[in-house]
Length: 414
Image (tube, rainbow, N blue to C red; front, side):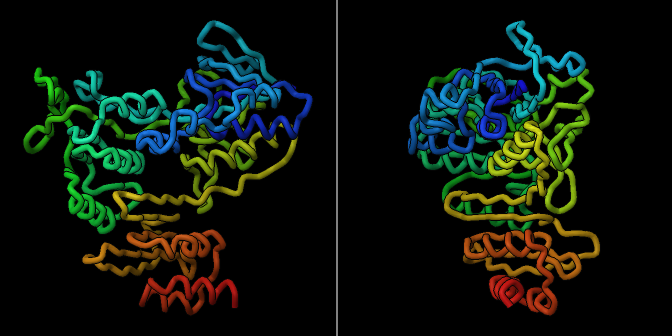
């Protein structure tokens, strides 16, 4: 059996290693379209702050790891998939045959139609090459503009402030992390950042980036409201999209990502998908792309088992995000926006930057937001993921959502 894996991120690497165990005699080809060995994007913030060197981002530390595993790792980009011929056309003109194909091609940054994004000093922060550029230019006391305060943007924000830059954040939404936090939580995060010397402009868009012609401040960031902001470096964190363009004409059904079933199989025989590119079942009964590394790893493992002839079901990912933003811990879980006909409760302590909001469907906890504390993270995840019936504890949590740990102990341990 010949297995071809498009994408050498965590999903692809774990899939290749799982396939080697499940199909000891099979041929495994792992394709990565970046010049470095397979690495973790989640490690890039640590590289930016100087905590680790480039080698510290690599998913496997031994330079001979893939060779020792019998995995043929190649630097190549997939350009087209031909399911009828069971072939993948590569960027160099080569065609690669397969019996089973895993699409683990990840995601790429989106580029809003803003003049000046191609200027020197304007960088995304998604690849190791991007991180090198930022590390080389965002020196201490440098003026930096960060475009985007979503989940990725806030991870980059944490790295930039640790580099000692003077930071301005521009976010087009009315709050920070709008896909993770409600208005109360997102506004609290903004106030926290501002109290630590970070300028945060919400409900503000970038209309253009221009060179100033001066040596020290080389860029002028034009805004759709207010005065322009000058900076030496502009970091663009305006979102990502799954890499599915090479599947055009293949017959593989896509929406935002590749549509897969519980076994991570697409609608085309022999083609699976995993990681940031896979749109499959989530824990709450929906169908989504959940682009975090633990999900990618589990996807890779499950898909590989099924590619080797097994029958493993993916149970669905719980949407869960945790951020450390300039020292303020924030987290959101499940259906944090609430559900139709559901109830909610919240407790807010503005002075101490503490906030918790619970969302209920019937007597189940279905979602939550938490700011300024870490003691509830495991409890909230446990209550949602185990679908524990709260019974009379729902009423107590509606009165005081801070009692979630008591509720968890009472309902799970009698």
